[in-house]
Image (cartoon, rainbow, N blue to C red; front, side, top):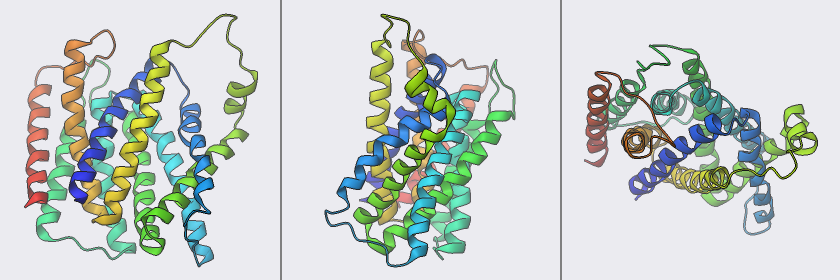
Length: 301
């Protein structure tokens, strides 16, 4: 069950990655603003607290819940810098390889989580497949570039978030843990009101008279938020049910979906979204998807 839930969540997040790139590149939204809009709307989750949400018993657990929320906000901040610096079909898979690598170390060190030899082989294949997709040889970049440094930062914070979430779900259950963690994410959004860029965007910046945001931009942001919420909930529920290391390694499936979706969009809607492929890149990505599929098969066995 957790496997189907995780794969469904990663499919949603693959679409979100494409929308993120469109919003950041076409609409020129500042990363700090995008983090604010991605987090502050989670504040209403605090209203669920009276409805069966269990409190933590130890002060340290309250601190860890806030740290988890802060790490998610920092993940978004680094992620959007990385996406803005690179092509979505490359930086996304790179982060997808970095996260399970950190998670595997953190989960074994702090949660004492063990994986079988088969699961370890599956994780390795999923990580390697994601890394192969991330190798970029495009008109804009060749090899390593600044976007990858941002990707490492995003992967580190995402791994801390995932491991803390797994721990807190074990303490108070999925429902209560989810409410506390994501309410903390919303609280981080509120704290961003102290940032001058956010304040200027909300209270000082004025549009020219009669100017309106294009309907496509509003639809893109709305779809991004809805699919992102669904994807996150599904993946987090899968984390609560299964191995945090294996579920995070399944992010390779997300990037397999991403490669296919970007190829389709580049061919049929080049005016909206397009990434150019140089010679040999198609073979590289087909090989990566094959490795991911093989790793997926090992998880299913």
